[in-house]
Length: 147
View (cartoon, rainbow, N blue to C red):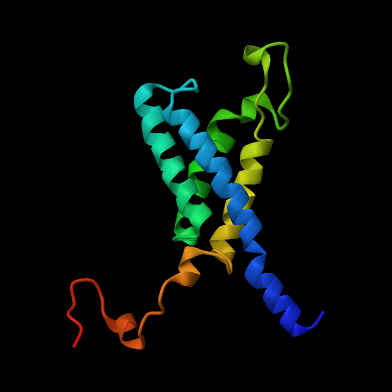
């Protein structure tokens, strides 16, 4: 593989990961906001709103590293505190109350979000369509006036 091919692969590799993660979190966020989970209305709206917004941002490719890091921390909760007693695997039951929700799916989402935190949005993203910043902008901090 030539340098050009590996450079091209690195630029486009995060795109399908970003699209999958964005769609998954968008769908799960909307599900929580609509109340189709066992969460209270307040927690469903807060967590669902966060997942929905972060899913949309990742899907579009806006601030992907930030939102992927936030979602990594967000999905770490079920892996550590909620799912371990139910085991690793998702095991089907006779009805929804008998299903054991292991931590394999949140662990996969954690790995995907961590990859996006490291790689960023990839080539096809809002981040890459934004106009480039001028070199002088990097020296201006919050509350400082540009000369």
